[in-house]
Amino acid sequence: MPDEENPAPVDSAAALTLSAPERQVLEALRAAPHVLQEEPALAERTGLAADALRGSLERLRSKHLALATDDSWSERKLTHRGEEARARGLPERRFLFALRRRGGTLTPDQLEAEGFSAEEQAAAIGYLRRHHFLAEGIPFRWADPRPDVDQPFPEEGALQSVATGEKEIDEAIFSKLQRRGLATVERHAIRRWLPSPEGIALPLPEPGRALVGALTPSLLSSGEWPHVAFRPYDVRATVPYLQAARPHPYLAWIEEVEEILIGLGFEEAEGPLLETEFWNADLLNMPQEHPARSVHDMFFVNVAPGAPLPADLVERVAAVHEGRPMPGETLPVSPGWRTPYSKDRARRPVLRSQTTAVSGRFLAAHPPPPFRMYCIGRNFRPDALDAKHHIEFEQCEGILGDSGVTIRHLAGIFQAFSEALGISEVKIRPSYFPFTEPSIEGYVRHPKLGWMEVFPGGMLRPEVLRPLGIEVPVAAWGIGITRLAMVALGYNDIRDLYLDDRGRLTGRPD
Image (cartoon, rainbow, N blue to C red):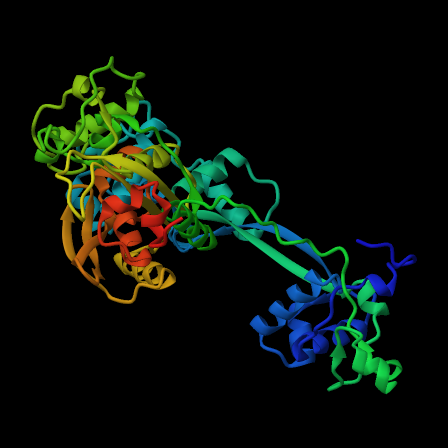
């Protein structure tokens, strides 16, 4: 912040062509020059809408006439599910109460009659068996020796601490609440403004009086020059940087797409191009004998198998594929594919055929919800080359995970994403994928090639989320970003996007 006792000279002030809102905001700041003012108070004082006020403040700051300070803080909060768990009790606590009411024996039918959802049953049984409250097998019964069921769980105390706003909370326990979708961290920020020394010292012409940008011969000959107001200029302003080279149009467009996604709150993730079948397909609930995993749809690489896979995760995925209960559980996630699962095939190297493999790696790291992730990366499939297909192409992978996320959020993202890219003709219909349910497909209209499928996605199935330990709904998609680029940039052949001939790319000779 400039030294207020030694302000910069007025003749070095920013170039002034103040709009009426900018002048109005500057005058409001100068009315209390040494008081940090918040934007809501300024909006009330000036009568400007929030967007107009914020734009005027940012322009004044760029002209060195206003200064801003930012304060930010984080606050732990219970989610809607967390509030319900605090009011009704955690599933594991309610399970113990039900077991005691039933005399120490509880069948799955009785558990369902007690009002437990399938998700609550899985969470409660897994927790109580890990902490030696329940014996193995069905019907459910006390472990031997019988535990003290009245002792509080650490998660119960943490729920209460979060609800009452306590600062000292065990981070490990709080992280468990986050993974279960019971708690979250809300981040807040507030910006305050005051005029800069230059903004205070700068003389403002009378309203409606024009500022003159240059001393002209007519002003000199007429003798009017002493009576006009001259516009100051900022000698500190940066000079536009010119360069001969230009980014590739397709790559420049992808950077614009990334800016849109980052602006929507998504974080970027990356993954290897040389994958294993486990991350590329197995984790995504695609059966190992699925036709899309043949030599006609994937590139297999004749190299040694990659690094060892996470053994515990492989065991859970194998159980899901074979329709068995996962380790530590008594009920299977689903009937599965009921075919033997090959761990050797899981390690087989392939060129990545879909960026959904990056989503699997991201979720395996157990990010606490809510989370938003995107990845724009290259994939490889042995497609026949034509105007809409290429053996190398980019996908824009994304996932959105949080309590309450539904397929409607996903359809809204597709619609908003298309509008941000200037694409107006979009239609969405139901579809099917092995790893999502429900599933949808979005189409955009190409002026020459007609409707093209570019927005496949859906809600990740329990067969994908349960082995990863994710307990909140997750929307996932793999946007055909290359086809979208054809529509947005006006190309009629997908192969033209990979040319290095600038004249053909831009339609102009060099």
